[in-house]
Length: 201
Length: 201
Image: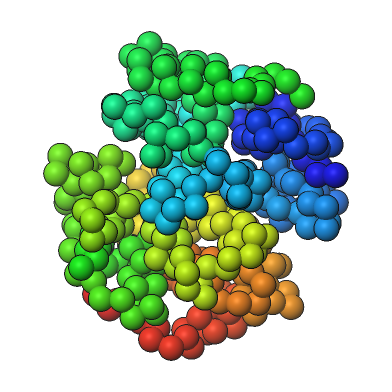
């Protein structure tokens, strides 16, 4: 059976959990307490040398890491990953954008607000990440003009990747009020059959 | 004809340039002076709302952004992107790792050293990025034990993505001396037919 090394509050872990449930695939979940260093033990580093969750153990014993690579793997051959060349590349385009321009800002701000507080020496970096997080929301709002989903008007793993940290952005102090298209899109994702919230282990 | 919006010193731009030449695909190159804000004009933001190079204009007028999505698109149907499901996911795994754990550290340190200097208020962040850059090199050295290339012992776009900023890491002050496997792998990439250096427009 598929085994997911996960951390409940993690949006990156949630991407995989959510897709597994949308696809109705059975899996075993292992909670890894990243705040207590459980992703930095020698045993865990043998699964992912970067020391992060999520990691998916496949049936042949292979460990796959990087959330967006894992969801691409799971979505292969399903309606959630297009086979058409350009649409497939655009799904990747938004997933790479998510990991470079969205997650490092919106997820990191949320993590600091929720778990660490903002140490005085990181105040300037925190404010920069807040500014870049707002910019990411603006990019999303602009792209969603006239679109139901991020690529080809079909729900895909690009939407899953972007939903993960966007829907919890308010936990980091981001106000989604000025983003009506983003809010309507979040509702469309929540309306998918077998949708489960991030709080569900 | 394909049109690449590029910046010569950019490793992200170089990934696309290099692959286009390895595949012997003709293209037109447009230099965008990112240091003078040419990637932040309204005209450029209409091509990529994030305001970054590279952007590839396809023959149908579509603009594709995010370097690793562009190289995945170009490599589709070539030996540089596996069709086998797990190998394809592992190529993506290393490309997502590159954009999250390698580029933001190694490329940013190089950019600051080369172009901006390190302002006093960013000294702590600079040192953190240097530390994380060294960690990324260690992860690569570990993975290359017993391997010629990053996935399935076949040269792929994962190697192109990782080559781009690894081979210029010394320009950011990173010493590649302690990484013999990384250095041997860099040589293997340079030995590919039709290889061109980052300095070639």
